[in-house]
Length: 195
Ligand SMILES: *[C@@H]1O[C@H](CO)[C@@H](O)[C@H](O)[C@H]1NC(C)=O
Image 1 (cartoon, rainbow, N blue to C red):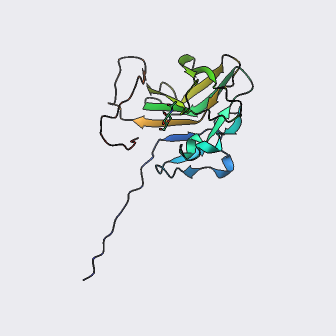
Image 2 (tube, protein in one colour):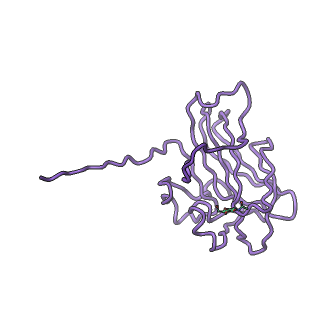
């Protein structure tokens, strides 16, 4: 008796996803992140300024691939990404920052993050060995979106990843404005991570 078991694994649909690995070389892009199967591309088509850095090798095992390279901004006060999105669509927009001592100076950066003309958050990475992250849910008012990093002191702004996901229109509806993530809790005894 022969039993043939066919297991079909449906590839994760990524329609409308924008997954940028900041500072990642364009020649090696895109790639599929082995930890979750998502396709990441280099950020270099979306910004003209900044330089590429790589976190300390000791962190290679602790963080997944998109967070191992970063873009830093030694020049200019304000540096912006310009992204193409779809007007009227509700998006989850997540930006991640991991300093990882890329410059060997052991000086955690601090700077401001802007969403178009509006201040989104102050990013103070002091003591944030595991990096930090900001998220917003925003209904696009036009077909483009600017995300800007603004230098405020001696340290250079850095950014590791930008991840944008279209949501259903009825997810987190607001009367006006956008929603900034306050905190997220995973109410489970499971030790695993979810996305
Ligand atoms: C960073 O993550 C590691 C492993 O999850 C944890 O042990 C450590 O306490 C974290 N460090 C900080 C500063 O949060």
